Length: 170
Image 1 (cartoon, rainbow, N blue to C red):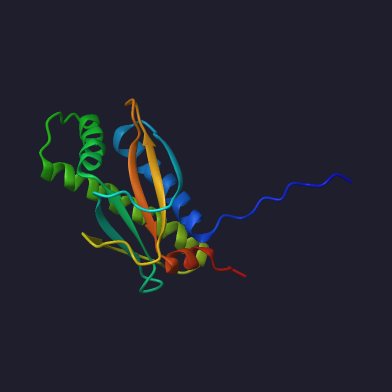
Image 2: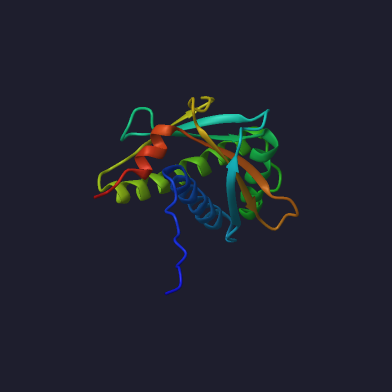
């Protein structure tokens, strides 16, 4: 009998980041008509110079993630979405509002997936400007559209969010 390769189930943090990446691709496709490729990998820490917003999950007061992006990243992502809608020139307020809308839609998608996993309703609340929770695991997200360079984001998953996504459903 030959040995079989065993695959390890993703950690709770990896599951959440995978759901985030899939939701991000769906949201961008819905807004632009083109599905981007989204990759993610663990990162030892968050890069400097990011603006953060925090998304908390109703199932646990400390379960949250932080989305970090530079102003350039926010403007690039918003610009691609707005250009797809026929809007060529955008100001920073429009770009910020568009990026926040993407964050809200992605959070809603992930809350829906988490609700299905946990078999109970889970909602989210967004907190702009909030730093990532202490002890968070960091992941680099790369969104690839038609441009030559990926659009980078950083996702920080709190230990409580990882535990919520990783706890047994038995």
